[in-house]
Image: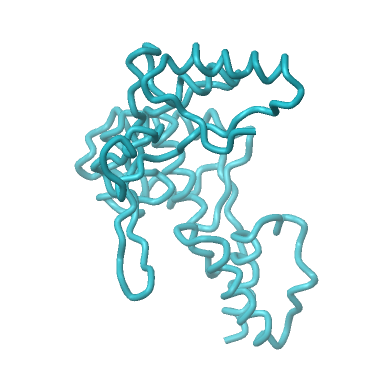
Length: 245
């Protein structure tokens, strides 16, 4: 077994197919681990030629680490000229997998942009109906609502309308529409506080731990059946606790 394998100067599809043929014919050769995922920018010379992905210029997030902030950049596929395709696609093809969809790798994530006019304009500029639908559904979730699988057509229709309209006051128009609580979305009548979908489940979990330990009139081990993920549990528990105050 070869733990780090990558012939930089080869046609990747042809070379990997040769390796796989050898592994099938010789029982003592188990195979390889393809080297490597990302360009090692900390190295120099030929050592930077192995990564399948390089870093783009778009910053996806900032990561705090030991009192410093580090920028998390998007990924861009490295080329494999002799293969006639990108390096990730060459590897995926040889292994029998699907090619990597790189369309949105260096675009803002609709699930992470701010829920305001700036976030709306960012998503609208991407010209993708599914991207806008994700932004709208996230807005509905933030308002304490949900969209059932049966209502996806309605969600897509609203997303298309948002993309066709002028983006100048798009978020205000969207908020006004959702504020009227369209029939195709379900809004919890008892919702007072909604868990922030912008943070990770571990953050919500820590807040749930504190809330449950301080609750006096309800128990967190007796939850409704619709509390089937961390955020919905947060919606329920935070709302119940708010009513105690």
